[in-house]
Length: 129
Image: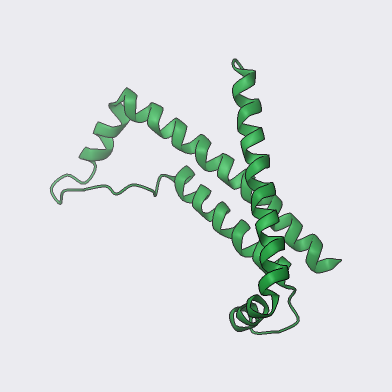
């Protein structure tokens, strides 16, 4: 909470990103609704799914999954030797720069997960309504 303007900027970027993707989804649904509906029927196995709901759910799941991979630390490869598989882990834990990088990676992953959540909620609302 030290830098409140930074958080406001992050929230504004998240809202802008969500609105932009939602507008693109609406345009794609109106222009290419039949093709998207056929692709959704092929993916989900039934034709009674709504097009916008399918798009929002797939995009939300993709964004949440990407955020989970970042927050979990799976976004980078690790080289382990067969002699001492824990040696790289110990070296990582002692590095201050590595700890700062992981903190930034975790916060970015959590923000991505929070960005994808409205898409899932909108998908559920549009499927129920």
